[in-house]
Every structure is written in structure tokens, then in C-alpha cells.
Image (tube, rainbow, N blue to C red):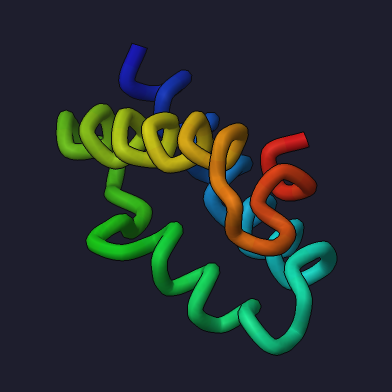
Length: 76
């Protein structure tokens, strides 16, 4: 199970950064990315990966109702 969670993390953390770079307006891009990934970093293949993916999911779900420019586009 940890390997599957780690594979998700390895795919979606960098992909999310790339999507933010592509769709968030340049003026707010750095702040947006810093906010999304605040206290969130990829973890090695160990139990800590569960917490990082849980935090990523919480941040991702919040994008759907965020008023930040580009948030809904990142979520989509």
C-alpha cells in the first residue's frame, strides 16, 4: 500500500507544480505555489508518505472553492 501511495505522490506533486506554473497568473504564481505546498514536501517510501498525500488531498480539495486566481483551473 505504501508503494501505491508513494507512486501517487511521485506523480502528482511534480504534476501539480507544473500545472500551477501553467495556469496560475504570473503575478500570483509564486505565492500560490508556496501556499499550496506550505509544509508539504515529498517523503521517502515510509509511513510519512501517507501524511503528505493526505495534506496534498486537503489542499487539492480546497482549490474547488478557492477564490484565488487560477485555483479552479489547477483543480480541474
